[in-house]
Length: 184
View (cartoon, rainbow, N blue to C red):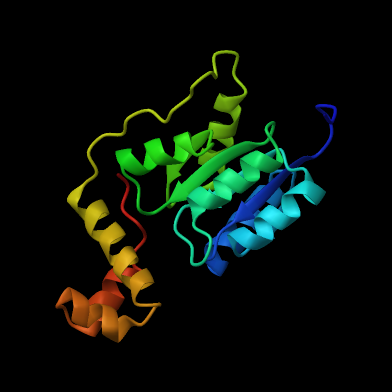
């Protein structure tokens, strides 16, 4: 175990390159030694060398999904904290992630401050069996924004295809995607 004044290490595992790079940059600005992996296979292979204090795992990735990644990370290190991040959050997926070895679960888009607050909660004296507090019902605007993001992901970023699937005009979809995510 490293002394408390040593730099803390975090491994960010996410297939979304833009989200991964932004999150890595934000954590590095907060004095974390940040490493990234675009998929589960690379993350599980790298965790023994890196010995991170924290792993941030996207739940939905091509190839090895987030639950399998959590299992692999937990098998490699029992002391590392694992936080699952997903845009497809629900109570059943939260329970599955915890069962597979995750320590905490956050819905995307989670920023670096939210992630570090969750990490701090995991180190609190009463951190046994920490689960995220139940959130209030999301607004209709938030649900719509999350649905648009899921459809865009499913369509591989193809706006025309996503607009056809949603039954709206391509330009309407583009305008909606340019907006910032509404607060819950």
